[in-house]
Image 1 (tube, rainbow, N blue to C red):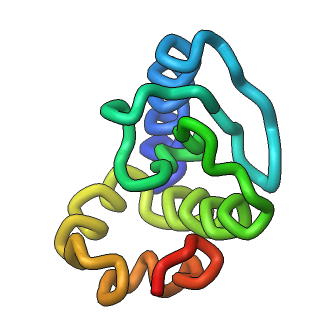
Image 2: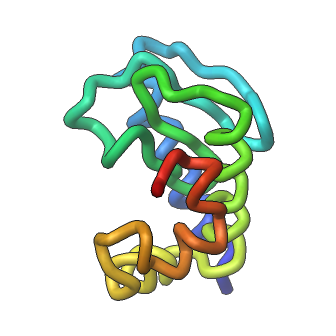
Image 3: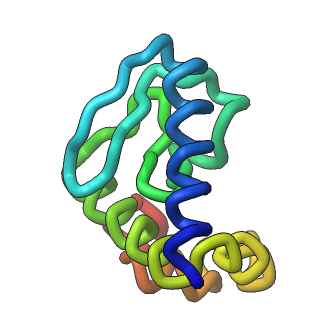
Length: 109
């Protein structure tokens, strides 16, 4: 039952991203990108909700590859991804989902 949660998260991410980015939406690197977001609207350099990557301007190819892995994680776990991610911890260097997505690709050291 993960796909309905993934679709719901994608829809909510798209609405949030479209409204707060001024509809600066594109498809890049396997994710839908909402760029130009205010910094308070996402975590760290950007956040993927379902298939939608929310960011102000962090758009390198390596970051998009990292975020595409998070998209796949959303597809695998659906809405359960939220508590699973939170339980994995806020330190990206120890968070299993960030490690799976590739720490170096996201600029974590």
